[in-house]
Every structure is written in structure tokens, then in C-alpha cells.
Image (cartoon, rainbow, N blue to C red; front, top):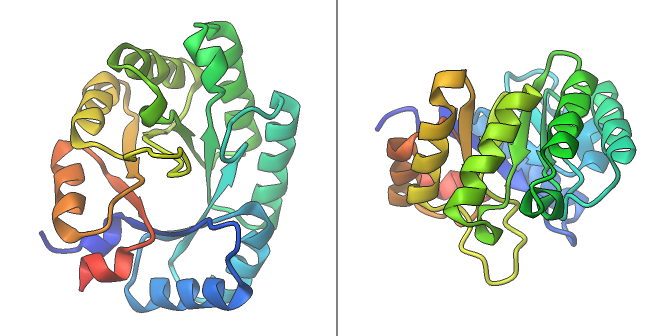
Length: 216
């Protein structure tokens, strides 16, 4: 498949990343014409400064990685990230509320964060490593009801987790396709074949730290 770079959100969310690592990420994203970069909120301004003369989008994460912040905190984080220059927001769902089937809470939280996005794309990270197939469908339905733009597989931070699996991506895609939402596969995508498997399963975005390796 050509144009794999158009799917890739070149990602660096490591706790111990240095500024030099981020500058390298930005340079690689520009050089390879990736769709975007995905960085922690405190680096959105740095990304904006370094990517201002490119078409590379800036994606950041909210409520990361546990999703257990209060809704008010997530909304504040979102507004600040947009103000700092983020183009897209990837929020982590509250997995406990999901498991307990507190639909009103989940839908209201997604909707509140979507409103704070001021028209920018919102992706809902559902953390598939922690979910049953039934949970995955339920989470996708909540994302639809909340007005999200994407559902996303994983944070990549679950200990012992696999991350994105093609079967989960396919299930997510089939659940949301008629509602106009898209799917982002993230976590464990480290080679071209895995990337292609995710796209063939229905993903239209890939979150990976191995973007350069995948396209080359």
C-alpha cells in the first residue's frame, strides 16, 4: 500500500522523553510527511512552534493514561490543549464507569470534552486490553452517543497489554461505521505488516512510535 505515511500519527508519550527526543520526532514527521504527531499536553506549544511551517497535525492526549480524572479536569485539559495549538484530542475513557455500565456519565463526559474541542476532532481511547468484546461494542456506542469523531484502541500503557489487535479494530469499525465515526489503532504497531493489518481491519489512523520504520 502506498501513502502509509498519511495514516500515521508519529507518537512519543514516554514519561522520560527528553526535549531532544521530541525535536527528533517533529523532524521525522516533517521529513516523512506523516499525518500528525501525538505528544503529551505540556509539549503541544513546542510542537506548534516546530511544525508551524508544515502540514503535520498536532494530536495530544487527555486524562492520560488512566482516564480516571474528573470530567472537569479533562475539559480544562482539552481547552488548554486547543488554546496551545492542538489540532486533535485523544481522551481516555473512564474504564471503571464503562465496566459498571454508567452510560449517562460516559456519554456526558465525551460530549463535554467534544464541546471543549471547539470543532476539532475528538478520539475516545477505550483501552481494548482491559475490555471484553461486549465492552468494546458498548464503549463504541457510548462514543457515538457522545458525539466523538473516532474510537481508538489503546493508550499502550497497560502492563502486559497487547495494544491494537486487528480483530478488535474490525469489531470497532463494524460498530461505528454507519454513524460516521472512524477508528484509530494504537499500541504495538511496530512493522509494516501490522500496520497494513490494522488498515485492512478498518483503521483510518495509526498511532505508533515506529512510523519511520514502517514507511521505510
